[in-house]
Length: 425
Ligand code: NAD
Image (cartoon, rainbow, N blue to C red):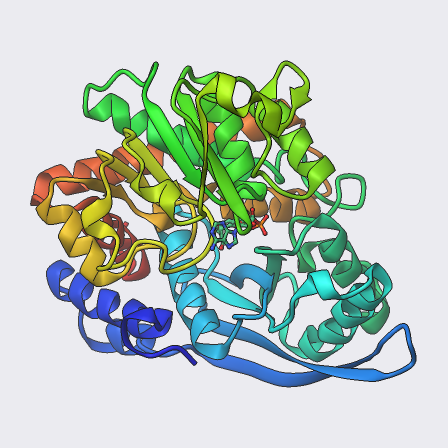
């Protein structure tokens, strides 16, 4: 368990108390939000390919269901623990309320480095985890989704195992499934694309032209890669990218995000992906004026916008002073500590908060759940148009709330969420 500022649950609770006090929230609602409704915390044993057994800890936190079924991702990462899951579940409660979908907040995962498992071991682990979760999940109860190191294939295994346990097809038990097996068109890219809609709407509210603005993104997984593609399409200049192994910085702008993506897929890392046309290698680096950067350095580059899109605690009291950007788009959950938040605010750096910026994923998860329940299949165009409309509307609501009360965007986002949770909007 992490201590103090690094413990996301301690941070989430502090955020709750502060924003509730500002929004005048107290009594039963505040009391309920202070602790999760239920926690599943169990050991999961699997057979490895070599015949030995291995045990892992699996968690599911059901934080709150005032507005509907618990909803939130499953993360496979060595740092997963109960406090992290509690914080992430709390943020889901606030996020689903903010964007106005009939869900509550949940989160979970397994403390494991999935890269150390074979695909067959990963499937056995996921199916064993599903057997642990089965009594506690269901389309009207708790609906998991992908998060760090989990994807459509893993959601498909969960859906299949759950169907075997309950003896009927229940596609709406999980979202982020493969298209063709109950998954929605447009879900994979929803969080990244949704973040781009939020950023563009926010810049419009500030009278800032997005064209040519420079962007540095930490984390080039599902979220970071689709966001980069969308910002490139909007005419912004993505100049730096990183993953857990390292990153690159090209002051004049990355020529093609798609080529970097292809290179990362082929080489397993971003570092070294200096692409000219379809040729990506280190020999292009000097001619491009490229520079290797560490995963954390990406956030202190001299750019207009930085995007933490990896894990929690990326912006802390230690590196906040080095941040030179005008805006922070929080695509990861909980990337900024409270101390760093205060330091950024004092310097006039605006932070677009996680519960707004990355809500596109859960929004399209809601679209998937609706399609499953109604037996409908929406086209990619319909999903994308609805995503854009809802993300822009949520952004306008938060910007409006902030301007009314002289609030930071984070406090404004919490204020909107509290209104819905207390039945006021
Ligand atoms: P992912 O596993 O697809 O990608 C994570 C990326 O972060 C990888 O590129 C990894 O190499 C990189 N990374 C890990 N540690 C790093 C470090 N220290 N420095 C730099 N990069 C690092 O995960 P994802 O789905 O893209 O999720 C990223 C973040 O977005 C998480 O905080 C997640 O909770 C949040 N989020 C995801 C979704 C979704 O729909 N996938 C929705 C909302 C929020």
